[in-house]
Length: 398
Ligand SMILES: *Cc1c(COP(=O)(O)O)cnc(C)c1O
Image (cartoon, rainbow, N blue to C red; front, side, top):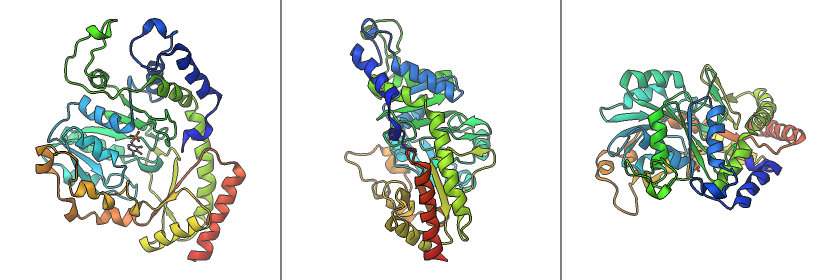
């Protein structure tokens, strides 16, 4: 997955443009810029690639989620449905605006289970936020029909699946809003950065203003602009955007490499009895950022993960025991541990997750191993990796 593996002349040249002008900020300083508007150009490139009207860049994927929620008018006390298996950014972005994260189970897609979503809807629910974990997507068709029936917003977190598609549409473009992360370990990176995509003109205008202190961005004098509503600073810098501009031009090249490496590993593992693969919803095409598979039970999966690591097969994850990506280790959320006082709405409405039953998630995540697909591997390296994996499963588990 990580685009940093293939940094080269294009990234260097883009960054050099910014250093030559000396303008590291995305707004203003028109006279000094030598025509360089890296953030603006990257927004256009992202919107074009994702086949949507608008893109808004921000400082991270986490802030993209926050700004996306705010841009659609979500605020204190509103409930946002999210999965038990995701990165902590999901609930962080919700809590940041005083809204309430409602965790629900994942199924054999390793993403939101539509039945569990439907059961979790209350009069306070405003958003369903599927997270397309590890290179593949939620059942967007089923989720969209639930959202339509209950008048809810569909916000896709496509941070780990950029370049995948569903029913021919780029992931992130199917719902009302989609979010990407361009942090250092994502498929394409800005170093730090994030993006929001939408076809909705007012969400775009709101995101644009909100992410820059509420500036309306009208006229040529930044100091004279007015502020139609309260905002915050979630801006990306020109330096970060410059790196991303080089990387987005290489996205399709990166996806082709991911697919090739993934296919070699998958073909090898398909021959192993007892291994099954994550379900990809009908109409979906993965980004191939990870290869995800299930073992017959949690104990075998845990042991297999250890043996893989000991055999030199690195970059495979057993998420069930992971501190950052699975609800079991989110003690700070479960116990509402924060530095300052949380908003009253969060205290009042956050479920007591120490008592929740997520056994359906445990069933799937407990049996899962996810292996990162790297861009820098040579074909020989992928083939020897595949052989090593087969060896591990043949000797240790059959
Ligand atoms: C990386 C990631 C984020 C957050 O992105 P940052 O840019 O690191 O803030 C959000 N959601 C998912 C699923 C991610 O993998």
